[in-house]
Length: 324
Image (cartoon, rainbow, N blue to C red; front, side, top):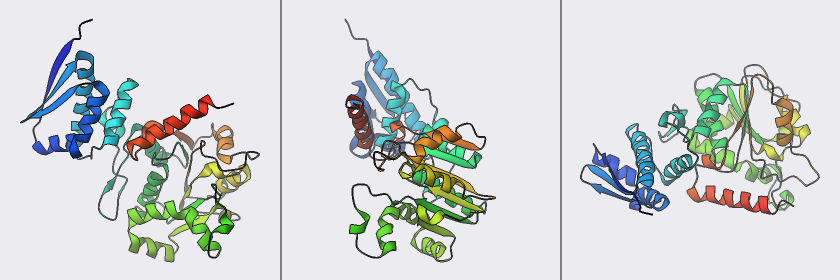
């Protein structure tokens, strides 16, 4: 059968747009060429795509969306390209506006934090709208980072007066007692991902000031018992490692004027086999309550290195073949 060869040309107004589109060592374009078997060249003020007709049309559509993102001031990475490739496989007609939301807040270095996938945008929009939001999905989808960015946004706009971040101190293959130091020093490794995000968004000096004056509190879940948290933005991270009793205890802590975000990955439960995950159970209990929303992120929403998405999918395939 004869292959229908096609050529498409896209005009480039700005040389810098082409540089950003192609990426370091042309990595962005190479992903598209590899996926669709097309040839993409930059000639003066024009990009030329050649290959079979169907592949050229898809590649052209992806490049046009990438250029639209660049012209809106957004960064284009190999992850961005992979995301549009996945959308094309699913025939998902998402516009750039479906993916990129408003700036949530600025980091200490002046970098804007925004959603990078449609799943992330739904997650952020849900946090703005609902009092309790569950963000459920695999590692690398930005669940915790975006929740912390939203918390900082709420704090800066004085919608809350403090941020409370917590996670269960559950051992993932390592024994807590073997770690050196006192109780706080033993607990700190469990809280490190939360500290890292806060350092990046707030800067070291502001973060330390907020910790010292109680504006930000980072603590293990056990420290939440018996408290009522008013006017707070409360985040429970790694919620898949809570028991049903711990989940109920946490969800009944928040008071007037507070916002709650619960994040977790139900494929990475570190509880014993005989224990029920509070996150898995709560989905069934609270699914029909107004003001509570469940947002599910997928491997398509992974914003770390593009191989993270492939690793997650490989494990999912393995689990499905060895589920017995």
